[in-house]
Amino acid sequence: MIKHTLLLSAALPLIAAAAPAPKADPLAASFRAHVAFLADDLLEGRGIGSQGHEIAANYIAQHFARLGLQPAGDNGTWFQRVNFAESRFASERETAVMETGAGKTITLENGVGLVLSPGDLAGPESISGEMVFVGYGLQDKSQGIDDFAGLDLKGKYAVVLSGAPDGMNSEVAAHLARTSKGIAALQAGAVGMITVRTLKEAARLPWEKFAPRARLPRRVLLGPDGQALGDGAGLKVRASVDDAAAAALFAGSAMSFADVQAAAAKGPVKGFPLQGRFKINRATKLERISSPNVLGLLPGTDKSLAAEIVVISAHSDHVGTKANPKPGEDRIFNGAMDNASGTATMMEAATALVKAPPKRSVLFLATTAEESGLLGADYFSRQPTVDVKRIVADVNIDMPILTCDFGDVVAFGGDRSTLGPTVAAAAKAMKLGLSPDPQPEEAVFTRSDHYPFVRKGVPSVFLKTGWTDAKGGMACKDAERAFRLNSYHEVSDQLDLPFDWAAAAKWSRLNTDIIRRIANGTAAPRWYEGDYFGAAFAPTAPKAPKPR
Image (cartoon, rainbow, N blue to C red; front, side, top):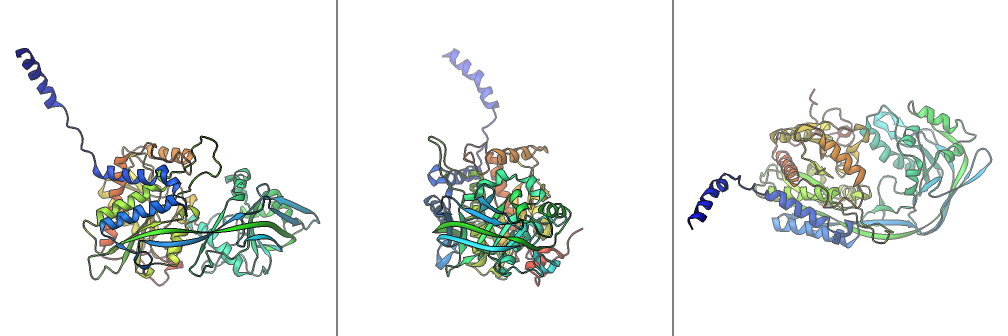
């Protein structure tokens, strides 16, 4: 007994000196639980129209209900049903027949020298027309740009260069390239649009990597009346051709395609009629798909400010499953980082904000069909369940990289409105930096669900983790690069990625503070004077002087 007592007494100082086990962060655990559920195999990649995505939407809605938010969807529900027409080819082979100005007839096969989209009408169809080159195909009268001026497009194909001229602001260029080409071609009476590539685009994306897109399905928004919604949605044909086919298109015309490419590398190129004809042959089958946005509202506490709404958005959909997996191959695109992590951020912000509601109201919006071209957010912007004039800001969360303890944040669009200083203040309070867009050439500001809000005149930011790590190094740049190379839109985007759940909790706290600061601010966010998007989409709204 004495011997045992002595041994025990000798051990006691060692036990007392041992450091206590660190307390687990309940926010990190809760965040992980949301991601684990949303990215589980049972949800089969949360593809739109699938049971898995419906389960995800119901999970989010029940979280909102448990918190005591108000349903803000259609007819007093949590959901806004969004309808789509999904078109696929019913034909085994699609072609384009070109009658060139050199007197030759060339047949292109879809997926070889041609990338052709399915149509909007079920059944077989052939659509033929003359062609007109319209330069980059851009139109913005406020900027004095109209590539369609003086050209007759009625019943013809508009042949457009990819992208926009160098020298334009990359975000403005991406916006115009994304929207104005289809809109202007449709308004000019064109039957379709054929895209030919600039030298820059050909170097960025070789044709052999672009061609596999040829037989992918196409999704179009449908309005309450069943008619197609979207930029240039009424165009019958959208196609791209490789450089050899483009050279044939321009044969016998005012300029050769090689000369057009060379000129386009220096700036805008004036359009002119082409000599041949273009005829597509295809057959399409159509399917209607329905998928929900999920909306919950936290009413503001200040009588004079509660009518104003701050939106925090994140897309809940992903890309579903592989069409033809090999035996034993993982077929599920779980989308843990993209965007279960963004959805979890929004849900945790709701959890925190209900404990001390801010002055302005906050709308939590889980969108569908982001992966199909921002369609869920686009539908909400066109058919809002709340008065869009009440929305004063949108903060969008999409695919933060949470495999690294980040030391800074990037607010895409933060330099365009007073939202930028608000994000900076919240970051500073957490000893984080606010960094400029590290890749402005990518025009990220036009590529996520905040963009439809921008087009409604709403100051918006898209928040992502930056490249700097918490120790001041660049480990987070390496982490993002590794994710994009190995897991972006791959089956490996799942829970066994090396998530840093403490960093996820930090990310959640930062975003909650940003929303709280906006919702409690003395003044609503404002576009800066002279900003393109503020001038284009909120021309009469008060503006703020841009800091020097």
